[in-house]
Length: 292
Image (cartoon, rainbow, N blue to C red; front, side, top):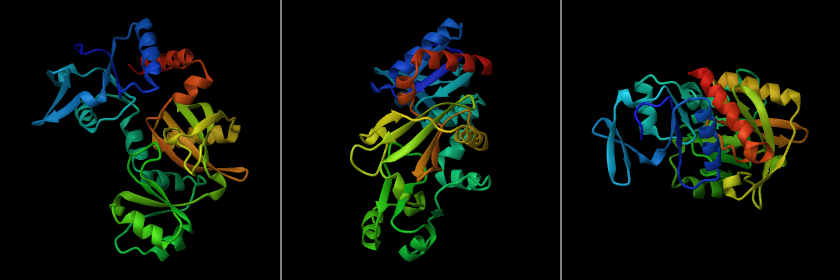
């Protein structure tokens, strides 16, 4: 770890498929004369009210003076996030986007005010019955975690009361959201990628077997061209959620696209494959330069 570079790029450092994107963006930041460092989120730990970077047996305390001018998250670590917030360091994505997309219930409420087409949704409250959930969102319905967890984890399709009891018995339902199930979208969704507030790419994700379309659940993807109307709507969603970089996911309901959720730290696996990842990384580096 170097002393106070311009930019930290925080990634998983687990051999993930996005590693080439980190390398490309680092290359272009170097070309632009922007000092930077790619750091693994797992190596940051909070101890005794301090933040430490621990790797290969070496321990270094992170001080406010060590923080860069900007932090780009490609992976999230709460301890690091809290420390960066205290230091008032700008981030990509920004703090508003992390908050508004980190709570799916908040996302739905914000977009409902803008009349964005989305599934019916319901927050858990103490004493709510299966019949009340069905009355609000229909059956079957989707039970999904409100907070953060991506890749299709923490998401269940509930067909009846027996399944509801079985699935929910080991869950803290206060952390979950009930959502209408759009059956026509079985195993498919459309993802629009936002960079710098603009829709730059889109794809259709498809399941290999079940109803979830996530790539991390074994799904695949194909290029998918969305309409100009959906591009503009996705850009409007990014403004409402406060995010300059987002993925906006839609369910397919006949000839309509229905907003499902948004992610402030989207994977760029598909755009890297559909487009020239070097061009994307160069645009990313230039965007970062404009923020410094």
